[in-house]
Length: 241
Image (cartoon, rainbow, N blue to C red; front, side):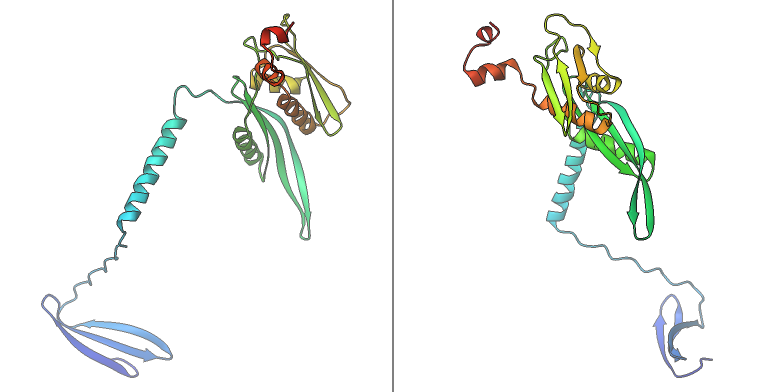
């Protein structure tokens, strides 16, 4: 019945009757054969062993689930300020390698909550959608707080600089006149929440990446009147006189 040398053993079971189990080795391959003489009932499937976990693993899972639930509740709060984003620039770039040029997309996105916080991000991806998603994620991660008056204007004039490009942002003072700036700078002001400001690019640069960086560098130089009074050791009333 079996070719080659075979070791045959007989096993007596209550349900399957006599069962013959043989182990043969033919042409260098090891095979297992099973012959039923009294019953053709199928074999029972083997049950997988469950990995034992100690009490520490259970506590870790409970803590992880609690943190995840808290994170979801924090994200879904109704009082969370809405993030507004603006796509400034999308372009195609390539990387030269030994195998040739590898093309990808680069995007510049500005976002803010229109309540005094804003940021920008630069993202790359194989597709335009991936580049925009990465840029928006970086912009939301790097939000910068910006102080301005209740009427949406700056407290004083500031000059933002990046490389050789300079952007002048002037405060309207007691005469609010709306936004007077280029389309790119106006998009940044709208995301941050500034409503009254006059901006002018002092140099001839037209690179959007440099302009956005210069504007946010200028925001870093903007200070609240309380900070000026505290640094000089004077009151705000005397500071304006």
